[in-house]
Picture 1 (tube, rainbow, N blue to C red):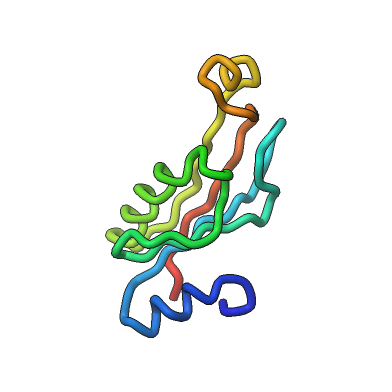
Picture 2: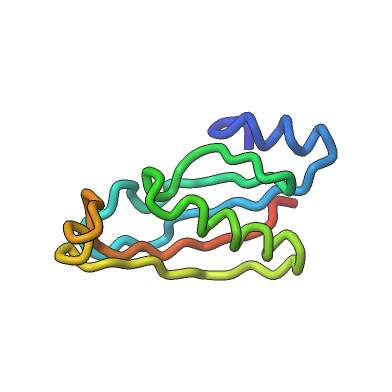
Length: 103
């Protein structure tokens, strides 16, 4: 994993469990492309990004669940372009994020 997020190696060496979230599909406008990743340690540390901040905390909560159960999951986050401007976000679109434990 160290080729792209050295934090994972550090957390694993400290004995922490880690989940990784990966953008696997983008529909419309999104701040991060397919392949963008966010690592989450069992103590809540974050490294990387799947959304430029828009949904990082929601993904972190899902990562906690994945670490607790060991079961990966696919989650869809989306907002229309019109809704994005209404709530003050710069982008709309939909992203699919796959969250899995790092072994």
